[in-house]
Amino acid sequence: MSRNDLYDVIVVGGGPAGLTAGLYLARARYRVLILEKDDFGGQITITNEVVNYPGVGRTTGRELTQTMRQQAQDFGAEFLSAEAIGLDVHGDVKTVHTSRGDLKAFGILIATGASPRKLGFEGESEYAGRGVAYCATCDGEFFTGKEVLVVGGGFAAAEESVFLTTYASKVTVLVREQDFTCDATVAAAAKNNPKIDVRYQVELQGVTAGQGGLREATILNRATGQTETWKPADGGTFGVFVFAGYVPATNLVRGVVELDDYGYVVTHGYLETSVPGVYAAGDLRAKNLRQVVTATADGAIAAVELERYAKRMSEKTGLIPQRPTSCVYEQSTAKTDAASLADTTPAPAPVKRSTDAAAAANAVRKPGELFSDTTKQQLNVVFNRMSRPVTLALELDDTPLSTELRGFIDALVALSGGKLKSTVDDGEYEKDDTGRAVFDVEHVLPAARPCVRMVVDGEPTGLAFHGVPSGHEFNSFVLGLYNVAGPGQPLGDDLIERAKSIASPLSIMILVSLTCTMCPETVLASQRLASLNPAVRAEAYDVSHFPELKDQYGAMSVPCIVINRGGEQTVEFGKKSIPQMLDLIGA
Image 1 (cartoon, rainbow, N blue to C red):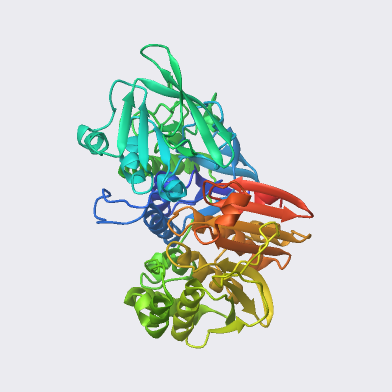
Image 2: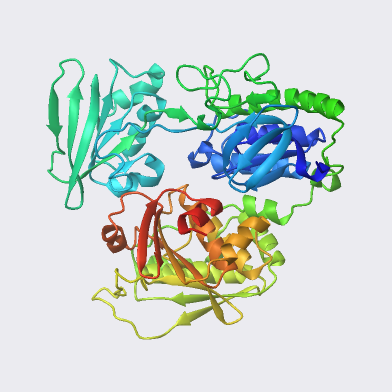
């Protein structure tokens, strides 16, 4: 066996536990590979606000885990986007079977975490993304002025029900038990909110839909055994948000290591499983508290033990993996490479939606106010690294939103040091009495205005945003510029090869919301493919300004992904990483 083919440790799972373990192992000069099938960062990436991680006053889940990944990478940890599909844990050298081939290591850390629990009520799978949701931050606005049901009795159900009152006319919480199971102060906020009705000892049995969305729900009273049909007071449509906890992602190790009655991995001592050399860390193991801080603690503890295990196995077998001898951190702690830049570009606050032309014109007169000093500094780094200039081709109509987009782009161009310029399409288009452009909702990629397209060397790149790319979408827009201009975000050769293998024309429409924390990853993944392959077009649409598209695809959740290839259409919901997007399109 070549030392190039052997790792000291393979970490399966790229959440906080896995990233921390990778950091510790790499820093100790062990060769470690972090394997992740979805999005590096784990479930915490969808959390919009983290305030209880020690030493960090306030951040987002994505920002926190991006920093963790960069630390691990700077110390020399390796990363691979692939799915672990099997384990061979016998012997001194173990094998992880993956979707990209077999990998060898002395030790294995299982850190696959947990995923949102599906309840299995009638209609849950059928209407997921079309009325049934699992993220209030991402999908709450779709139910503005409507009633919603919240299913669950823990922390998430209590907290998110209060958040949903921002949008919903009324929130009804369905709790299986006789009371909430979370802290009393958290539950009190829901109990005392005048827009929230809490019902105890009940469960949702099913939902049915009609024109426009969900119409009826069947609710079981667990105390009496009676069922009832529930409808919103106005007789209209409603939404269902499920916050019923998580289930451990332990299918990979079922039958391999000991699990408890609930499917969690049983660990001993310093997080070793029932199999020597196989450790577990994070939310998938049996423990009494599942938080980011406990996941990172698990990762550190397991990593230290795996260091000792790998050292013993190396001495026993005489095999020595090709361990790192230097790292980015040591070479220059101040230097920021392209990957770090891509992960830390901050978004400005969403541009306030203009209600009249005068307000929009004001945005044009004061472009500098759109971006903070910190954002300007990091934009300057992005622009300096761009290999080629990019033209931002604007397609506008006679609405204040178009004026707002033009002001936004003018501000960006002014900061670019000549790396950006803009043009305006003065071609003919149909518009209604308000000056809004009319577009065909059935078109593969509707020509909805306002729109900004990225053009390089006079050729369209296939990347476009319909609306104003501010809020959470600003990051993906800036990284789109960086990717089409080059050199672009670092990407594994295997993923680049898969992206370039797409031969037939492919169109990807992504319906997004500027408040959604999951949308940018999907937009970025889709547009990264388009930046690599001219056969791919990936355009994002802010559904708050183009509700016709939401209605066209029955979308009550974002991101909503509409893929068209050769006349065949696929509609998918949920956050997608680059590997997941490639899997979705069959590349």
